[in-house]
Structure formats: structure tokens, C-alpha cells
Length: 127
Length: 165
Image (tube, rainbow over all chains, first blue to last red; front, side, top):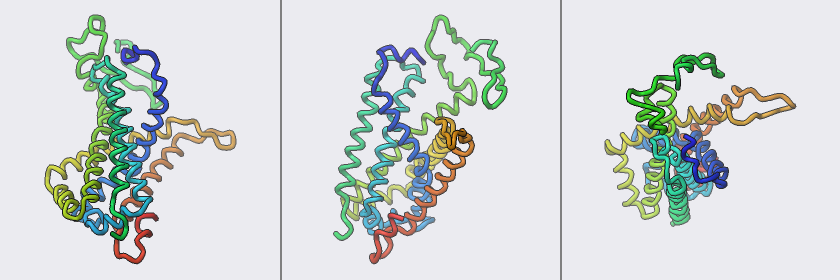
């Protein structure tokens, strides 16, 4: 797969790899339980806070919960971006490496800004 | 991928047969990857599924953000978002996402033990110890998510306690 590296070394690679590793770690630890307990069992089998507006509002008023939500949404996007950047090469797309990388990381940055915007504007504890 | 690689020595022992090139593939005239190369053996297939897991986890993450945005817009919007999640297409999506998230967790936490060389008191910490720690962390994190979702947001007297601990 060395054919993809025909545009000189990418000096920003370690930075993106760091975000990739952080995203891989947090999603490895939290994503399966989060999907299972909020989006599958939490919709009926379990009395999960997230199926009730009032409880979700109170829960997400907690700064630690917001920080967690920012971390898992943002970092999972950077994790995807770094994997997908090389995944397209696995399908035989060897050119336009920089463009593809820019689109992948750019999407993750846009997603992070969207997450920040949403999380900062969530309702407070008593509104 | 020549015939000389029928047996390969790896850390796990002898691995038989890397795989034969797909029919019609000529590495000389087509120096790129052969079509559907990931179907040649199970390791390649698992690798491609592992990489694909990030797509589903990211899609789930975007859906979670949309749900949070509905929360910001108020009770009616949020209840509608939860109602959509109870429908079969959303349940199917979350079930598939869960399966990919599990593939990601298992492969990533095993890989965590293989990456760094950790030394304590001059001796190398065995790979297994790091992997066991990573899986214990996974269990702990999963339990935390369960507890926060069960206890979080209840009542009004001590709201902070439910989410933080």
C-alpha cells in the first residue's frame, strides 16, 4: 500500500494519529455499553434516563456528562477520519491522498464544532 | 504472496497458507491491489471489518448528536427523536452498530497491549497484563454507563450525584 505515499511524508500524521488513538480508546471503552443501554435496552427494557425528556435534561446539565458526550462524539469522528483516510486505499483508490485526508479530518472538525455548539446550548438544570 | 509463503512463522506460531491470488489477478501487469483481496483469507476480512467498524461508530455518534440537538429544541422534539429510535430501521441500525462497536472494542483493547513497551522496576510488563487491564477498564466503563443511565436525572434533590459518580 506504499503507492499512496507519493506526495512526500505527511508531517501532521502523528497529530492525527493521537486523535485516532484517543478516539479508539474512548469508543472501545464506552460505545458498546452506550449503544446497548441507551439505544437498544434503554428504549423499553431498562428505565434509562435518556428515554425521558426531563431526566435527560437533568442528566445532561452535569458538566461531566457534557464533557463525556463531547469527547465520545468528537473523538469517534477523528478515529473514523484517520481510519477512513487509509480505508479508501484498501479499495484501490491510491491517488488524491491529501484531498481525501482533508475531507476526512475536515468532516471531523465540522462535527466537533457542531457538538460544541449543541452541548453548550443544552438547557440548564432549572429552566 | 508467492508459493514460498505457504507457511509463515508468526508470534502465534506457524500460520498456514497466506492465500492464493484471486483468479485473473496478475501482479506484474496490475501492480495495485487485486479486486476483492480482503476475501482471500479470514485475517484480511477481519481487518476490513475492523476498519469498517469506525464508520458505524461514527454514524452512531452523529445520530447521538442529532438526538442531543433535539433535546436542545425541547420536549416535543426530543420525544419525537426517541419515538423514531423505537422503530425497526433505527433498532436495526443500532444493533449493527453495536456489533461493529464490539468488534472495535475487542480488537482495539487487544492491540492496546501490543503497542507500548511498558517497564516497571526495569522489567517489561507482559502484554497480557496490559490487555487484562484494558478489558477490566472496559467492564468498569460499561458498568458506569449502565449506572448513570439508570440513576441519572431521577428526582430533583441531588441531581449532580447521578451523572458524575
